Image (cartoon, rainbow over all chains, first blue to last red; front, side, top):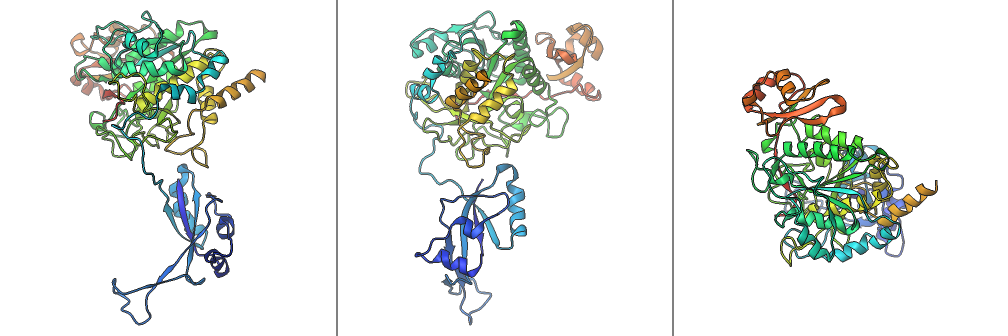
Length: 450
Length: 77
């Protein structure tokens, strides 16, 4: 969290800050503030003190004031950063620990533009290819060849994906799976959200083998044509465990991309109830997610589209919108940045409900790609960011099966190599940063040589 | 319908689960069947009617659990 800290240092320091002919640094003014990373590039600013006339009405809100830069009156602002994990504690303790601290204030990002839903695409999928260094991945033999990548969504239209990719790809009908009541054939579903997700997985892993799991097309009582029920996802994950365990243990790999979640607490038990989903690691779906991770699957979830700047109108959680499995410690929760590297305004911010350190990282979204929603419509939402990241994971798995690099180790590697967007590591906007293929490749090279 | 869980260390079939939980067939979603949640810990899941779930509320650790709708996260509306 970026903050402005107001201090009242000794008068000679205030005088130095207020004098344009002198230079005072943040360290001169506020050195040694516990838990604060001072920004040395920010020149301390003197703030005048409003001083009322001595003979005025002391209770009047309208009395005239003058602003005094006198060394004994003025204060000084410095800029710094506090870890999101301990922001509330630091904010409360700083004035108590340091008598010269008179206030700590938020320093929000001010921007003229931030990408929101409804905005036109920012770049295209070839930009994403470049940003993900897909050529370098392929050069290292990491193109997803033979790696099963399950897209749990609304079903894939393979012809549409191939047409817009400009080439064929592999879809494994035999290992695909429909929830009961869904009758479409793998790869032959209507063009829509699942088709977009499938396209986006293939940017970084062009030779991955897609598994079509149209879990959001459930027709069970309580579902609708455009959503499913969590119990369908439980059944889908049980199927995927069989897919995983059907592979030889030494080469086992399965990437599971989930661009969906629960928007509202309305259908959930209250937090604290033993049957609750959003905050309860003992819910059967959260258990099966953990068991798939144990078995060697890489599970990725979109962080959601409930970012503060332009949240999706369906978002109904009053706070902490990364809920349930989307916030599980055993998954990679993926936020979204545009191709300019800026967080899109709808990308949900942490802390998560099961694990506070969410999202884990960000990947690219809001680019022109699959055209699943029309020629001028972007692949958008954290829905697109998640399969983009899943493609990178599948690419790594080409030569690094779970027996060689466990899902937990791969998550750590991706977090550690992500391009940090703050100065204190993890933050609740970007997580550990934006996925960085070159960092991943360098780390893998070091591991190979070790 | 609600989700409930059952531990079946020996024979993991829907019939065995119904017997363990004392449920007649008409209170169980047989189309959904019995799903392996964590077979290493002998934990399985099934869907039952609201009435059956209410009765099971008194059994420790077996649910009922919420089964909320899930929706695509995009495009943002």
